[in-house]
Length: 211
Ligand SMILES: Cc1ncc(COP(=O)(O)OP(=O)(O)O)c(N)n1
Ligand SMILES: Cc1ncsc1CCOP(=O)(O)O
Ligand SMILES: [Mg+2]
Image 1 (cartoon, rainbow, N blue to C red):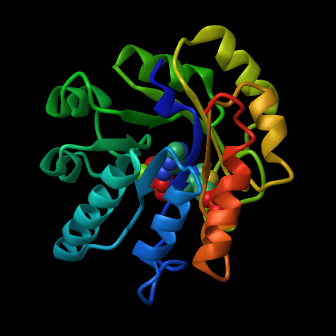
Image 2: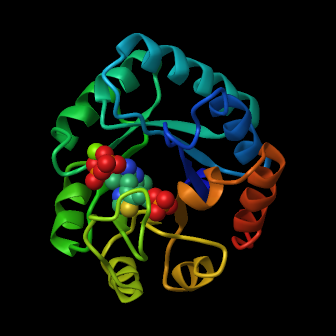
């Protein structure tokens, strides 16, 4: 299993990272040890999305992390990076065919092992479960329990991602339950400065002894 698929998985937020914060705050998260970075931008401005994703790809290259595009396999193919697909974001098997065997393709499995079994069969690189706690970013996401990670660990030989309301107080219990990656938006990017983003990213990263 690639060691990049263990540790902190930072996810951008277009509201928290408005006003010129996107690149300095993401760089701080990468300096603090984030191994994966997801560009999550729901806007329809394709030119800006391309420009920002290209800049993030360069930052990820500098810090040895992998860039994942949320929702958009075609943008991922254009940039030669990975993609994260939810249940309404198109076919995982088609994305695998488009991006090739080495690309990182993540799948949202909410709280259902059945969704994980399908994603596993269709060629996912990791399985994402959650939300585990109350999430300000996506309050309506289906709730999952830490026990689900134990069950997923027993069924699937793929890295497991936990997402949803993760902070520095509740992170440890998810790692102990089997999470390989912790996907975090608000706790990281609501920080008041880039220096604080870096401090928080480092505090998450050291929770993973071998990363
Ligand atoms: C790592 C990770 N896990 C889950 C999600 C949620 O994906 P999805 O259900 O498609 O919801 P949106 O993020 O697209 O609103 C994710 N993005 N990343
Ligand atoms: C995209 C997504 N899917 C389930 S919860 C979530 C948001 C995670 O953000 P936060 O870390 O701020 O709760
Ligand atoms: Mg989606």
